Length: 191
Image (cartoon, helix red, strand yellow):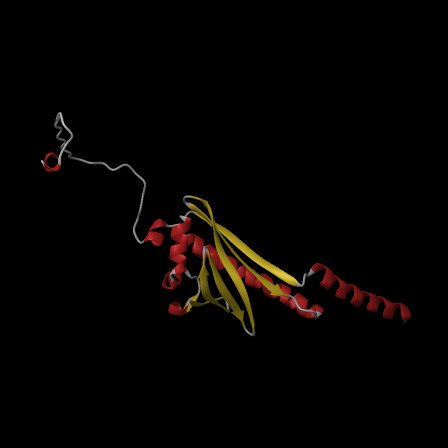
């Protein structure tokens, strides 16, 4: 009988110790994507709150106030800084601050990283619950970033017009040349 009580007590202590060892007090949730888009154009596009509704995978509660919903989570863009945005992530009673920031990888390549820190708490069961919630939040962030990547990688979506790099074929062209022995004046140019 004593062995069963000691074994059960040892398992409880081991369970509690393992939650404190393997689950940190601050759970960092970070997701990132790489989009084939100009970094400055991407920032200008994302800085405009009304553009978010065009690519957001969930529903837009109030696009003018940058309130959005996806997968039971509420997201609110609170401020825009230099190449980054503060976003509040809420579900139920909990609200976490997060940061979405852009890195330039070249002229037409942007790395977008979104991260937040979730407090795991002191209760071992609460730590496990908060860890699972953090994983779920990370999944939502990944879905949103994937939708953003798909949308902004299309040049027409980013700029509003289709821009392509290609050779322009001109069917008919007339060229007139004239040689003069002095620097050309305004009259010469208009002739």
